[in-house]
Image 1 (cartoon, each protein chain N blue to C red):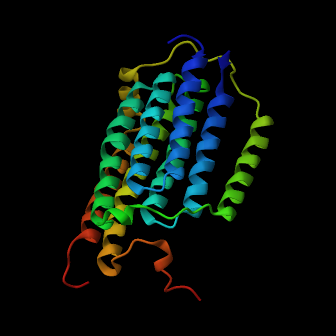
Image 2: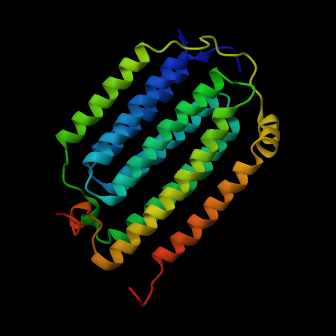
Image 3: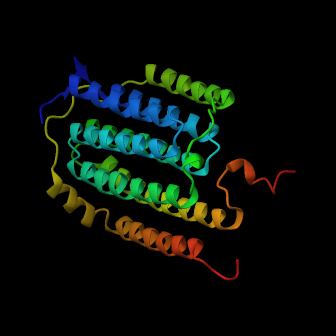
Length: 167
Length: 103
């Protein structure tokens, strides 16, 4: 990894990310929207590679592109049974657009006043080995708490979605 | 041209705004959850970018991004389980159909 981010690659990935997000909102078919979300997640994994976060890029592909997209597609299949159910009416939502634009404007104003701490990208980036070592020494307790969170979420998801006679 | 930290932050802000717009306007529960994932994704990009530019050796932002991914994975799993539970009772997943608490 060189000291600077390749501008061409960055703008290609940025176009893929934002374009995928916009297409996800522009398409009227929920299934197509799920596939655009998948494309956005894969482009984000490319951005992580650009930032030399190899492990996170791998996790992004595994968790978001692999698990979350399949989960979303399964729920679409289970809840929108007919083909016509997946086609949504056009929902421009002017109020939401105004709120989002105001938010974007506020963040833009904050960014123009933002002074980057280090303009030059640091040349050395630790690899996966250092990442694992820090993860299991310094961040061992949060790691265990995270696994507990996942366990509780798993049990709760099964509990909520089961076919019970009491409901 | 050189791409710096502000570029990544701007990209993340745009992505977050698109997700915010989707969450506020879509009337399908599944679309709203997908837009929530988009927002979590934007936050993760920001965390990783700041980690790379400011604390490259400690990688603090990367660990935050990992834990943020864990939480958002749990969130999407629970959210979709709720969608299925609601579908069992109502036979619909429209957000407009859930208005019992409307005063």
